[in-house]
Length: 273
Image (cartoon, rainbow, N blue to C red):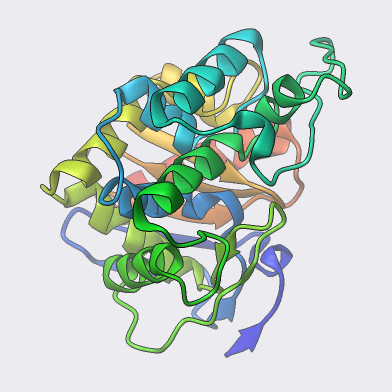
C-alpha cells in the first residue's frame, strides 16, 4: 500500500451501493489526505461534544465555502452561537473563492471568516472550551474523539496517525474506499448528530460550497442528495438511493470537477443498477 498526496487519486473512483457492495476503478489501495472530504465525519464527531446548533450552522461547520456575504454572515453567527472569538481562530485570512467578491485581508476577523475552513475551526474551538483540551493537540481529547469516530465510520482496524491538514487541523491518510465507507456510514446512521450533518448537507448545498461550485450545482440540479469537494479535485457524493461515490477529477477546476461528478453519477447507475 503506497502513501502519497491527494493527487494520487486522480481518475480513481470508489462506489458503495445501498447494499454495501464496493466497486473500485483501481484495486490498488493508495493512502491519501482526504482534505475537506473529511469534514462531514469530523463535524459529526465534534457535534457529540458541542451544544446544539441549527442546520445552517452545521452546514457552515462542514463547508468549504466561497466567502460570499451570506457565508460571512453565517460564519459570524456560528462564532456568536458557540462563544468563539472569530479573530482568535488559527486560520489564515482569506479572500473569497469567487474573485469578483473582494474582501480586505487586513480587516481581521471578517477576513478569517472568508477562510473555507473557518466553520470547522470555530466548532472545534468551541469543543476545546467545553472539554478543556486543545483541538489542535495530537492525542488530546478533541482529536481522539474525531480519530475514533473516523476509524469506526470508515471501518478501519489499523491505528491512524494524525498529521496536519493544509489549514492546520488534525487529519489522517485514508484510501478512497475508506473515505467512501465513512460517507456511507454517515448516510445510513440513525444517530442524531450524524442525521444532523446529512440533513444540513442536503438542505444547504449553497452554504456548503456556493455560486459556481460544481458540488453545489450537482445537488441543486437534483443529481445528488449531497456533495462535497476537496483540494486537488477530490469529491464525495451521496445519492438518493443510498449509494455513495468518492473520486478524484483529473484537474482541480470547476468545469473538470463537474464532468467528473457526471461521470460518477453515470457509473453509479451502471454498476449499481
